[in-house]
Length: 158
Image (cartoon, rainbow, N blue to C red; front, side):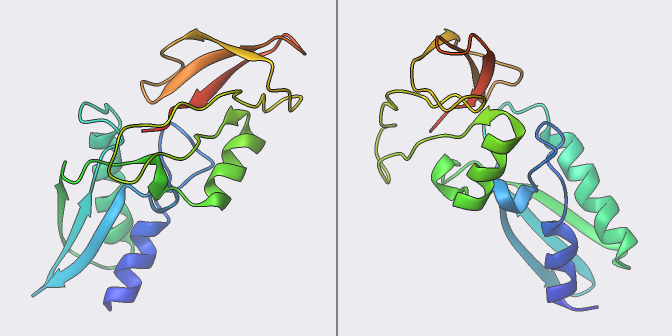
């Protein structure tokens, strides 16, 4: 059992709130290492109070046990804080295909940039408006498209 096998098993863990992305796609998987017989996995939540973190930790442990690793230690770190800039462009594309408008970019190390004209994942229009600061999860906002009339979630940049 190698570090590469452990990393591969953990990288395939699906985010319970956004089933088209893995925790690696989201950038919340920070590190995987092996110390003695223990696999240590470090993760950072998208929000410090993210309710999905306990499920993600359990899924990480299950994936590693299934891969043959008996001893697992999942650690949550809050610093540096997670940013949507840790998401890859492929992950953002898959969010849009799933019906969630992907986040824009933030200023590295600085405040979140305002994303003007959130693109509707249904019709592509930027004639949209925020309906509610919170969508189906705390990391998303609810938007409405003026062009097609469809509501959609937008993954907030931060």
